[in-house]
Image 1 (cartoon, rainbow, N blue to C red):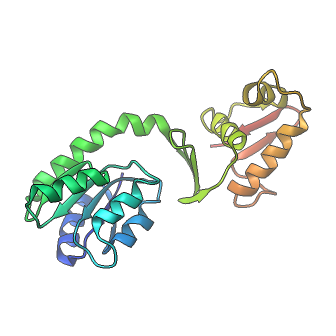
Image 2: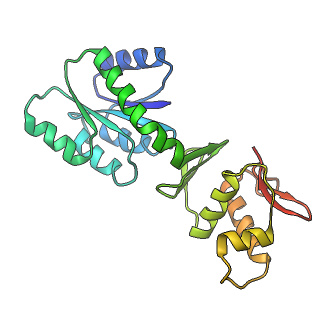
Length: 223
């Protein structure tokens, strides 16, 4: 699991990172709110530890912006103790709050608790296959962590194939499942969509690694 640590205190970031990496987590770090918003777009991120007081963009504004595209859990860190600051954090979409200075054991305990609560939801909605990540809850698609725009039918088609790896679907099957009985078209509709999907998701669309053709039969997702 990847965790983001965003704080402008270098020693604090090193200390948190060291402890989390010893627990087996992957860690990415940043020093301001802009870093947080950029790094939070990585679909592998499972939790963010976000300081409130930072240069360029503070943690509250970063939290607001992250909530526009992600529901990844966020733990806010602050040196302030006023209840109003905590309320502002929760209003921005934070899931938990720790006041500095804090015990690293408490932070790790809170991280474990939040990840345990969200694990089943994340597992059900998000699937990763090689360089491709699909999130059925948000209907977002990523290639090597970079968002890719798919049409509704393209997403439905990819999701069907990726959730049933190595299962070959005929063009007729895919028309029935994705477009439904009331859709009247020929099987070339499927071919066109597969070609467009390969152009968006494959490293080399002419020699695909994932969206494969079973000649004379149909298409499947190779793992």
